[in-house]
Image 1 (tube, rainbow, N blue to C red):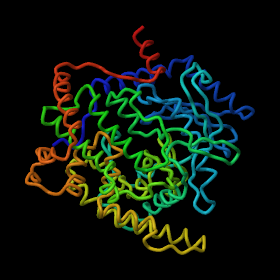
Image 2 (cartoon, rainbow, N blue to C red; image 1 turned 90 degrees about the vertical axis):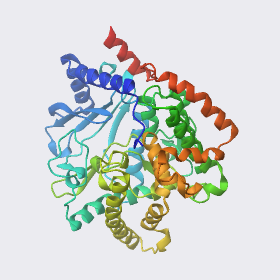
Image 3 (cartoon, rainbow, N blue to C red; image 1 turned 45 degrees about the horizontal axis):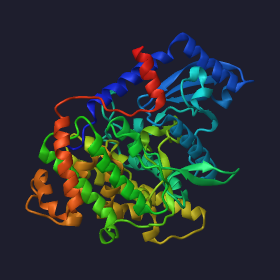
Image 4 (cartoon, rainbow, N blue to C red; image 1 turned 180 degrees about the vertical axis):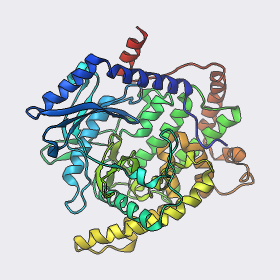
Length: 491
């Protein structure tokens, strides 16, 4: 069984083509100079000393300007990459807001060092109308936390992997730095699930849908029409989980290429998604894994990981970046221990899921010790005592031991869903069966659990998906700016 549902290869190629062309476009002399002038005018009356292309990350291109009064640091202009970000305006608005919210609301004793946003704007306000943008402070750093954790000698295009020879004492110290951020973020919450908007000098409300990384990726690489995405905020966790379950089904229905490889594979994937939705809809099943139905809903960042945590020469955290997919979410997301303890996701682990779990559990015990130390310091500072069962470390331990971790992971990761569901979720709720040793056939023993209309839907889509496999077409629904740039490329 494949460990993940492959990306739509036609959409992936087009996304990469647009990204590469746009990055070349940025280095047109006139465009490059206009960006520099725009940043210099923003910084007036400071005298700039250097201007350069800073980096192209997974979702953004950045330019850095430094100044003669170097003690005050530099300024970064960041632009979402067309063809990669499917919701650039929404992304910029949400990211600027959440950085301001975090800066205001984290405590003096446990701050999360985020860049200070000095300006953000829409496409028509940007130089050469390149796209929506954020101008923020530059955080001077020596390296990322990932550089300290990963295997030495890794090449830039290789997948990350935790250094297997890292000293336990050093690992705990680095995990402690990360645990401080995770813990501090967990203390921020709202009474709805969604993205934040500032409504007054110190007042905030959940005003927009929770724009997740998965939503972006299933439009970009899963060819889901944008109109199929949720648009609401949520006051109950079960409503949001049901929306995520529906997204899994819609994704499978709409991905044009690489979604299935046979009729049985199609049925197996539909059965998994219908049963996952059943876990949400059935009250008795839901009560086994979901808590805090009515909140509070902590702030959650889909893209928080060691690579986005900046450290100085002393390996102390000086900044945390890349907050675009951050929103308030069900508490189960926060109660699940971080997937990134090994740096690599389980669906990409070359030795398979079972080995990932073995290695992860070893590192998890070290991280939980670091989290407990973090909690002790925090509650001692506040002169508070907390029952063991109320601690975030205890809830993380329970999430892993119970398997709730995998429900949260499957809910958020569309392309990893199938292997996670059949290996880690199905038997917990629906019992073992004679197909346990052949997970590819396990779906056949679950058909009786489906509703009649679900079986009908599955049968309708099997023939459709098989016919789609006969041709390779691009079926894509990008944002208007990406469409405009595509037209410019073809002109």
